[in-house]
Image (cartoon, rainbow, N blue to C red; front, side):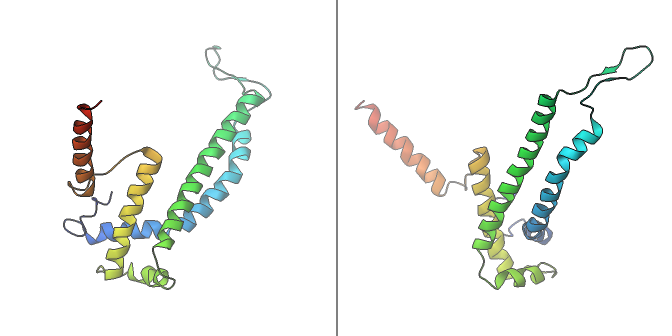
Length: 170
């Protein structure tokens, strides 16, 4: 997503600003998801019957069965848990994002994101956001990013050499 810290080598200004705007919109997204969570159960019961089934067509080929209370509870619980996980991850992203900013930088960033050019603050924040995205991808999906043979590449080389040394002794 961040082109792994290629800071403005091949990135467009709108890509930088879009990522920053996505992070600035996290509180609104969390509020929206919290409102959605309260509507999951009523919406389910409005669209599905627990009492009985109904005939879909005249030839009895299509018959819709009702959900059992256990199935309904399971479906609703799973949907609510999915939304809770999204909220939890968004909150974690927000805390990491706010943690990399000084107290007054958040307001400055909100104004700077509307400008046509990229400010030094936006460059630094973009770099931090790339690190946050890498951290979240590794934490929740196990995706590790390599940085063109930098520190990760050196660790892998040293690990290989260490394993080679141990082969003779084990």
